Length: 286
Image (cartoon, rainbow, N blue to C red; front, side, top):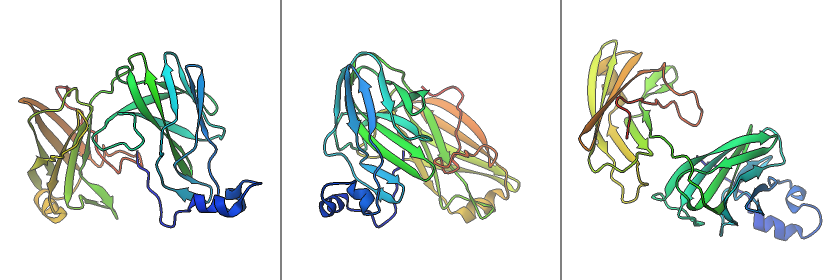
């Protein structure tokens, strides 16, 4: 989930102060704010104002000072939004704090459509207290809201997911922009030892590259990242033209896994994926 904004953000507090009471001050100043997202469960409802959004002619970045709390919910959690043509994604985080950190637990949760502008949130992971981020999107706009909730029933656990950023289409030519990046999320445990090798075969040859594990002080459980700095010119000299058969050999705590893909055939068409490849490993990742 990426929240990117252009420069020249509007100071909403200044606008409200200048306009005073009466009609919507943001509309009066030629700016706009999306309507609240309503979340209901456990006999309670919270109304969530977007802290980050692009809506009509206004973009704003921010984060909540505190989290509206839905309390303890044993049954369904529903989400509703009054505008048409919006889609939403949900992510659960622990701990449930207003200022999350990169190492916090992050679990994708399902939002099941139940009607126009209405969804049912399917909790993920074990019971517990979570921050839930909701990210809404429509053509030309988006928004982010968050709330806290304590769940009492176990939800689904995401399967391990791998992603490889190898090549991009740069004016009709493959370009790695000097870097190969490979990562895995949602492993059952964080491996103590991990190694990965990338092998690329093209029309003119074959080359292998050792990917170095990226060691960060803070990383969520079950996540591992690898990276290799390789100039694009040296890759193309070694392997020639596309299409490229790309193999990944992975070793996690002594157990080997392998995957093979073809670029550009297997590159993602999702605009948020940046043309990444999705390796499917044999045997499956733990």
